[in-house]
Image (cartoon, rainbow, N blue to C red; front, side, top):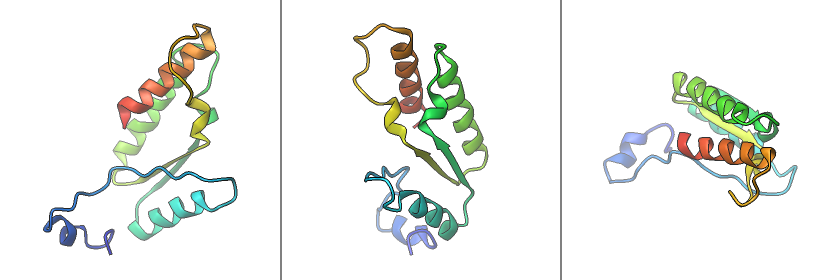
Length: 114
């Protein structure tokens, strides 16, 4: 009902969610749920894997993240599903190896885009 009649909820002060974080073990239907949400909302579905943003060269992953968000904003409203996003996680800073800096920049870009 929320997807089909958002104005009904906005009139009572409810705000439209900008994102959802799905967490759980593999095979529990997270991807299927995201696809179903896009189908119900009649919105385009975009999928990416967190590993697509992990590179050896600093700046490449962040650039890919920027391009992905430019694409989904062009097609908004839509559903963006980034699977295995935990590869970008971890404690930021501290380790100054190239791979760590790349992950930090990519994660920072993701947070900026959101």
